[in-house]
Length: 125
Image 1: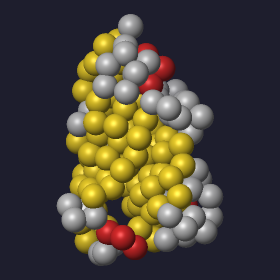
Image 2: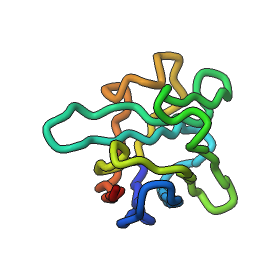
Image 3: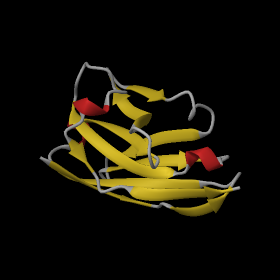
């Protein structure tokens, strides 16, 4: 069992930056794949980024490549999502998710059994 708590969301102007944090408690942090997903009103939950995906790879959605960076600090049991050059279309509720190391696709949110409560990101134009 692992508990996840996100923080760092807020309101920012287009072109600005935010860093989201996800603090994990419970079992050994390094035993987990960690992912970030987001969901905008009226839309399905979508993949943003994943760390330690399928043998240690980092993976990004096309919309996040070049702008977002996922990182993890095992000493602090925390995963981060640095978001730069934010756009209004990035506005969503951002969720941190965890799963035990798994070979299935990291983009598939259904494979993550553990979720945080979400943190709102709003980007104004």
